[in-house]
Amino acid sequence: MLELARHFGLRAYLVVNKWDINPALADQLEADGCKLGATTLGRISYDPNVTAAQIKGLSLIEHGQGQGVSEVAAIWRKLRETKPNAA
Figure (cartoon, rainbow, N blue to C red):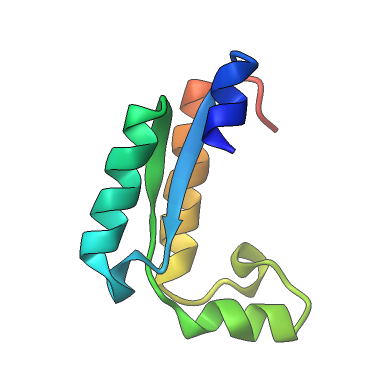
């Protein structure tokens, strides 16, 4: 995907999900993404509340519980800073 974005001259962003399961792999993903021109927006820890939200048919933010909520919110703020017209 990152190579395709680079081919078309598109900005690419990276979010590493469940990074805390394998921190070394998360570091490698970010390094590889950087080499291909992606900007890392953040990391989301493993959070069983994500599954709980999915079961209820809610987004994590709507569910409103768990560490992932603040991590996703921080990533959204960073994305808005890089793209001011984001809703």
